[in-house]
Image 1: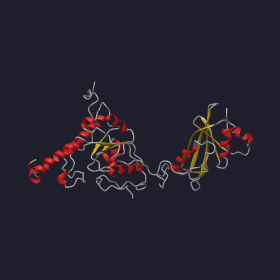
Image 2 (image 1 turned 60 degrees about the horizontal axis):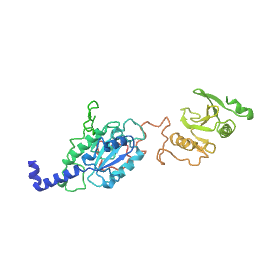
Image 3 (image 1 turned 120 degrees about the horizontal axis):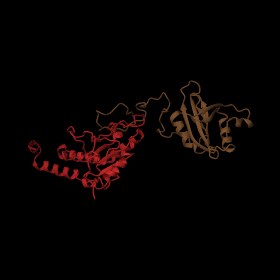
Image 4 (image 1 turned 90 degrees about the vertical axis):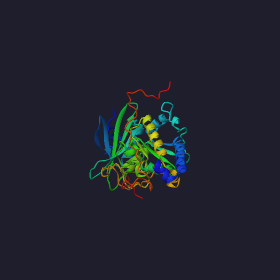
Amino acid sequence: MMDELQSEGFITSKIDDLVNWARANAVWPMPLGISCCAIEMMHFAGPRYDVSRFGSEVFRFSPRQSDLLIVAGTVTYKMSKVVRKIYDQMPAPKWVIAMGVCTVSGGIYRTYSVVQGINQFLPVDLYVVGCPPRPDSLLKGLMMIQDQIRHDRPFKRGTIIDSTPQQPIEIPIPLIEGPAKTQPSRIITV
Amino acid sequence: MFSFSQLQERQPELQFEPVAVGDDPGAIFSRDQIFAVARRLKDEFGFVQMIDALAHDRMERKERFEVTYNLRNHRTKERIFIKVRCDERDPHVPSLVPIWSGANWHEREAYDMIGVVFDGHPDMRRMYMPEDFEYYPLRKDFPLMGVPGSIPLPHHEDADPRFTVADRGE
C-alpha cells in the first residue's frame, strides 16, 4: 500500500479502488451455454444458488452489455469462430471463465472435432473444472474473479481498453470441488 | 417368414450374397440391383420403414466401403439388412432417397464421414464437418485427433502463448 501511494498518488489509487469495487460488485455475465454445463449455469442463476446476490443481477444475452463471458459447454472447431466473435464483441474490461472440463482441456472428447482447451484462442481468466461443475463451484469461481477485479489497476495501466492484468495471475487454480456434498448447504432458503 | 430367396422367384437373375447381421438376415447386392430390390422390398414385401442407413470402411483393398440399410416390416415385425459395396476409386452408390425420404440425412452423414457419394441424392453435401473440409473423418486412416490446421482456429492475438498449439491454421 505504501509503495502504491508513493508511485501513484493517493487520489488515483483511491479512484482505482472505487472503480474496482464498482466493477467487482456488478459483474454481468454473458452466458455462452453451449451444452450440458449450461444447465448448471442455469442453476447457478436460479433461486437456490442465487448469483444475483453477488451482483450478477442480469444475465445479459448480448455480449455488448456484459463483462464476463462464461463459456459453458463443449467448443468444437466449427463453434470456435462463433465463441471468438462473441468475445470480440464484448467491450473491455472483460473476463472469461472456462466452465467445465470440455472448455478447460477438451473433457472426455479427445477427438478431431473438439478444441482441446479454449485457451488456444481465448484468454481465460479462470478455469472451473467439473463435468459439470456444481453451481456452488461456479459461484466460488465468480468470487475469485471478483477478487481478481479488485486487485486490478485500471488507471495505472493507462488505458481502459487493455483489461488483461499484467502481473502474473495468482489466483486461477482450478477448482476441484465446491462444498462437500455431505455438508448441508448453508445457502438453503426456507 | 421372409427370406431373400423369395426375391428370386420373380427375378431369377438376381445375384446376392447372404450374410447374417446379428440374428437377422441380410444380403449384399450389387450396385445396379440395389435400387430395384429396395423398391420391391418396400412395395411388395412390406418393409416400409428404413430404420438406419450407414456406411463403413472395411479396410479391404477391393470394395473398401459398404453401405448398409436396416429395414423393418411392421406387420410381421421382421428386420432385414441390405448392403451394397463400392470401391475406393469409384465410391458411388445409388441413393435410396426416392424410396425412403428418411434416408436423406443418413446418406449425407455417410458421405461426410466416409466419402461414399450417393447418386441421385437431392442434396449431397456435408453434414457435420465444414463444407470445405478435405478429409473423411471416419475412415480408418484418418488420425484420431484430426489433421492439424484442417479446421483453422480463430485469430487470437491475446491468447496465452503458453497454451497455444500448432493446430491453428490460417
